[in-house]
Image 1 (spheres, rainbow, N blue to C red):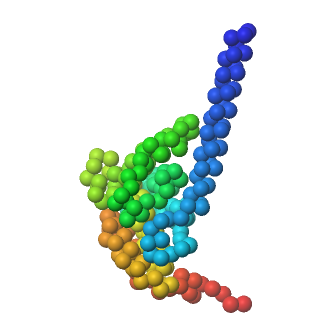
Image 2: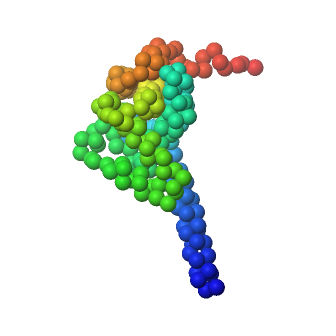
Image 3: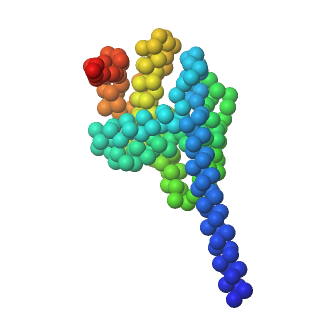
Length: 210
């Protein structure tokens, strides 16, 4: 009887620990809504895009783009959702910082997901994204969904930069052009071209005057 009670108590503690870990993770992910993308500071933008906002639009773009190129839209969307999650711990390292700072993204993500086994597959999704960056595109882990996720990430950057250009930030144009040149999929390049040619604002012809 004593052994049974001890076993039940251990199981209860383990279950409570898992609940604590998942609650901790979900609170932690909320910090991405407050964390600004540091690259925008290089453009002189004090109030920029949050990491969470960036990932949200990238995910929508990924779903659409995946359907256009014959990839799994749900997997591609998941990759876009996951691709910046480790930045809840590492922060967003822009291209200048990247010359001097080495972030241990894998360790950060492993620690974040510790005790939340249901999300273990997120690690593989992040690997697919990283393997599909242009300089890694010939690795064995490269997938069409990974390329879609990566291009969706870049497309969001393009849309964000072009909005800043429209507001008078000339530095943002180079940012948009560099992102466009890094796109891999032809369909993504077409979307980028449409973005560059778009007549602003987006609500022109949509608004209704009562």
